[in-house]
Image 1: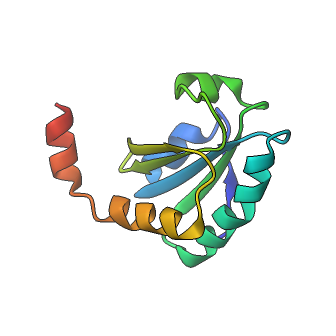
Image 2: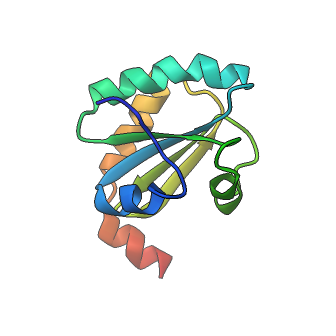
Length: 116
């Protein structure tokens, strides 16, 4: 599955209607973002059951501010509408895969209970 462009108009709908969403906050001027982009795109092909979204921080400053993005690239992992992990920096493929697998295995009932 190819990555989808997330905006303030489709962000909530995307994160609430999909079991798992992996989001890359990036900017065109960011060199590490460009290095990470093909890794993120390849992961989207390996995990067809996961939605991979990209947010251009320059075009969507409201989302960057709302999620307190301080450096880019930053990857946010969302399960069942809840942010369960946030990782700053360009990730190597094996680390991105490991994080996706860990987020997939989370017991969301336990996560929700802990959050309350």
